[in-house]
Amino acid sequence: MPKARIAIIGTGSWSTTAHFPALAAHPEAEITAICDHREEALKLAADAFGITNTYTDYREMLDQVELDGAIVAVWHVAHYEVARACLEHDLHVMLEKPMVLKATDARDLVALAEQRDRELIIGYPYHFAPRALQAREIIRSGKLGEVQYVNCYFASSCINQYRGNDKIVAETVGFPVMGFGDVYSDPERSGGGQGHLQVTHSAGLMLFVTGIRPVTVMALMNDLDVKVDVIDAITARMDNGALANIGSTGNLPVTDSGALDLHVSCERGRLDFDFISGAGHIRHADGSDEFLEGPNTADMSPGADQPDELYPLFATATNLVDVITGKNPNGSPAEIGWWTVELLDAAYRSAALDGQAVSVNTLYTDEPSG
Image 1 (cartoon, helix red, strand yellow):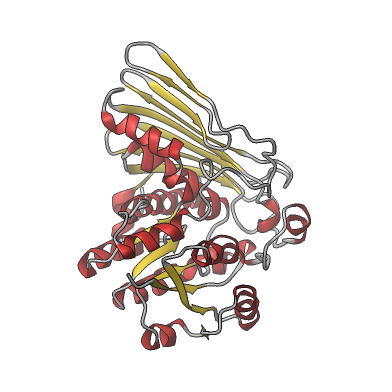
Image 2: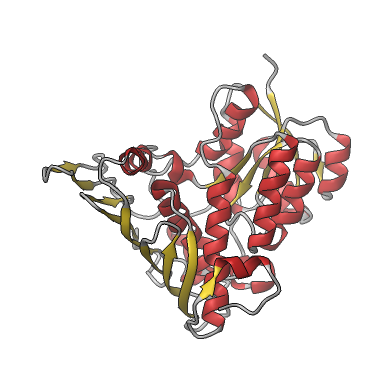
């Protein structure tokens, strides 16, 4: 079978850390072309991975190159227009998180992918982690009953990104090809801060595991000393009546490996999972307890190679290849990305209104939120 012909649009830090090496190592994938409007970033990636077919205009590339799929890893504010163009060229797409910044754009991409019969994969590696799939299976089996309360907590060391300084990260963690520069400190390019960079991961994981969707959202955010949010406190009512607290902070030092905890309380039991260590606890409906140990790993520090079962770094790009070749279905479906965008779109609107409740339905109308 011919190799999956894939273009990578956006050749920055994350692409050269995850997507380029994933496709380069895949026997059934071919990096057919790459694109970035920044010539220096384009050259660094091309030289690092031996790619000669390069473009600075993604529209020109899509018109000229025969492709089966594309990875879109551009600035957050450009996700919608680039992903839409790829779908309009009948490509399967792996779109980095956050899917988009506005709920209306997320809905539009989901509809377009369905109309074109193309798969739209959202860049959430945690959705491929065995612990996430295990938690999802437990909740969706119905054995614990209806989800009634969720607590989702994510703490990370992104404060230097929000200050536009990647030197500390480079010295502590390192970058395989290039750093992220100051993009995450700029709302014009990245939208928000912790919400769009990190809460999108934890909220997406919460929605993936539980299968419930936000309907009303209240949020408060603290920008500390930067131009984007660093600390977020979000409360949501879900479509089944459950309540959810989604909290996150990006103010940890770069030497801290952080925390990603998901607690789900149901009618007849609960689960508590630590997605950084892989440890977990399940209280079954009969009252018995099941304790799950994480993998043995000597080094949990930032920058250390983590077991694939904890954070499958290459999974989203690999899934694109599998979708194109027909080997596996979409493991991170666009609907989850859409629901996550709804949560965050409503949260940012609520925070701007000093915590006033925002109905998700109002995201699709011109009516005032609330």
